[in-house]
Length: 374
Image (cartoon, rainbow, N blue to C red; front, side, top):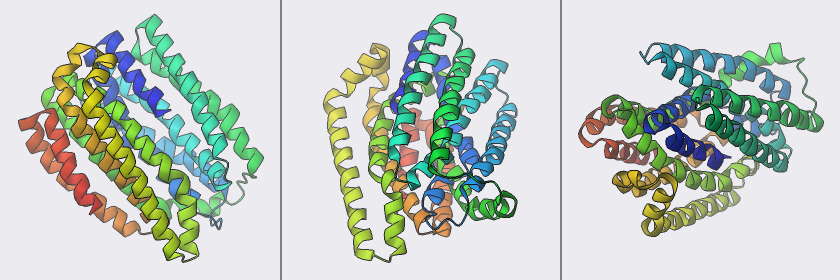
């Protein structure tokens, strides 16, 4: 699914050029940050709620409210930034698509708790195909990025409404009878999670924001397009640990320290293997792959590839450790570690991106993510 989304930016790059591609990547980056508000950071919390403290109906109902807040928050932010009307519309419309991901998340958590990851996989495959063709065909025929994003959003919501929603309802009874009495408690308890995730996504988005601000949308377009293929590494790492969240929660509940630590070691080993293979692949095939995707005009920026891969690996480790802190309900640790990294990111972005351009993004994230991991 993420591969199909990454390819969309490549298609925009080829059809409409690096400037529009930069706008598209900015939209993806900002929607990731404000999408956290919409999802409210509940996925790992919901999956690890194995005792059913809150009803599934409460989780689903809360997503309507948080999605509205996330959309309004992004819209207000974008309108205050002084972008052109067309760029503003691109950013807001892309957030509509992003809401499809945050909304399906609540149904996928239900499926994961029932050990039905196959349902999630089928949904991801279906949305990969339909959103890819809806976007790329619309872009090819209309050359209009806004209409293409709208077509992609419609395709995604159709799959969610007719497949994910119905599949979840067949597994559990989604009862809304306790929503009024449980909603506030759920939102209050998960507030540290949405705070941490908003901060965490800001850590990755702030350097790109300043890169566009100081160096222009074309440079951001080149940097973002080099970074997009490396997200497959992050997905590979997430593939290892995301399905294990419920297992970690069960081991923690049973106080099985040996089993918990053993599984922890296996996950780190898996991430390590993926990291080594990825770096070796980039050393030998990096330039060839970039030219294949973007043609020769990307080569002046190919030196960014391996540093971006390292950033992606560090971010995958952060994802995993933050998921574990959620499982053991150490919300204080989540907030403190991410706040420290955020401050570092903000300060170093202003200093280094002015001086080192796109490389400054990587330098900033090296320091911020390593400190957060520690």
